[in-house]
Length: 335
Image (tube, rainbow, N blue to C red; front, side, top):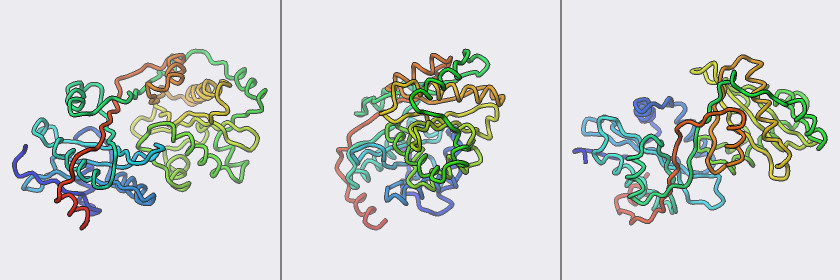
């Protein structure tokens, strides 16, 4: 353990958000203080705990950070997503273990039942160490990348015609907004239903306004690359992509899904072809999408269209069953 180490809950003070963001940059993440604050405010509005931790030395330098927040898409409450980041020159000195122990103690006091943690596949030693500490693998999630020029030929016209035979039509969100007074409520409701089936921790949309801020009003939003499957007035499937300022030639697939009653009609493949056709028409060079290995149909679809699986992340779970230190309980009371 590093000497003179102090672990404390981060406050809402801007200096704490700056410290967390600075540590994230050292580990290759691009979160800004405003990004972190916005995430925490989203959790707070839903009544959820989003707690951050700073591990600092006697000089006040931040050597590591921790974070936990609830996994809101599970039917049973009590599972929390946790994250630990440590400065590279402080690795293998017990700092990550100390952060984890403090968070687990606080989670136990909150009545949590389990922790989820993601580890990069290219860190097998860390994965093995966590498994020795009781974490068990739940699934793996991988980025799949397609160089658009290598996409196979599309059968989009025929696919759309077959959907029409079932009374289904695909519109862009831009068209929905122009034609349907209830477009935002309908697409938000559909998105909320679909995300409950997909483990995507960074997308905690609690209100319609928060969903709109990300998917509709954000600078990266592309309403003509947001495809909605309509059955009459009902929205039953969607697939949407966004751009990123740091990668102007790449499209990032955010979500593809259909309601259970409409599966088996080829909607997923039709939506995939619509996204490919959009990328080709608008001159994008590649598409990146993340898929869980538990989602075999979507893995197969991406492979069919030439997407290449890259090194991904491993989701681990461990039950929370630790005694709660009195010091932790006192901190919870006064926090």
